[in-house]
Length: 449
Image (cartoon, rainbow, N blue to C red):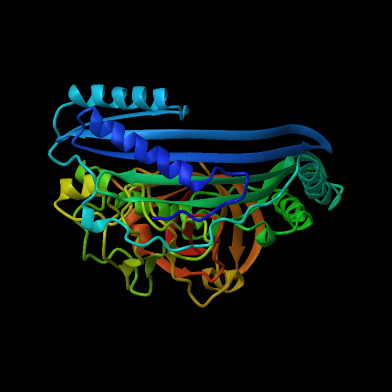
């Protein structure tokens, strides 16, 4: 299948296709009964400016190839950054040597041929930014300067950063599939420190998109970072209590991420998920729907096929609160006696359907409780569903933010948290692979003084 053409910054797609064909041919010549290969190339520029001075300026150029071979149901994998014929031969030999000494696994093997992508739509993932080092430095400086100049209490900076990356990938296997695409990723961020008599507080902001034109202006990012740091000054602690908790959008997607982890094949076939055997069960309130939308044009999680060449398809993971499907690759699907869902390599644009309320409306519904804007630690146990994270944010009374809070812990059980979602905001954060608005959970334990 053809790969979209790219600019001179990337290799001709036909070269990558030829490399994949050569790897597969070499695997067959060395006795493999099946094989798959991927070849990738990327180039990137990143700049960080701190207090007006260039702190880092990095240009990355990387390439690699990987091959997995099967001798019936024995598997071996190897990779290299060398694209020469000798390197391909040696890499395939290494993979074959591994496979010959590996125990047979009845679930090992390529994705079923009928599940492979037959067409590769153009999802508008490639939007190169002709960004030079001098221009990148100017943008980073403007971003940081906007933050430092916003208020005299912004006393220090961890820097303004600009990054741009473009790359291409071609994957093929011995079922006859070969396909690829090019993509870009651009970002701008700033992190600053506010200080007054109460102490110091750090915060940040960032913007990311496949299109440079869709990024927030540098000055906007800088000012937003400054305002976020300033609003944390004079933070207090809370006494231990139970209260409703409103997760800001950038943190709400982490809550949904725990759900995705719990319904993923690896956790399920190892029986290490609190959502084992939960298909068809109500896990969320009936107003909540979660979709996977891999073909959204230009979205950060979009892809025409997964890491096994399986066609990606739009589907509902949760419909009216009821779990409709798991997140499976071919191996985990076979272990579970099911079919792959096209999720080798992860999910693609998981979108929580937004509700009617904006953030201000959610504060009114919250009435009295906690808004969480920062989380620390990794306190989610997917075996039991127990959840406990260090947190900071704002205490709310009468639907209005009263003061910032810090040095607290929020705790609960994910299964109860999912069922206890009282509202989803329409303030979707689109800066990642999980797209979610603010989440209001009816009750959690807040541990403080």
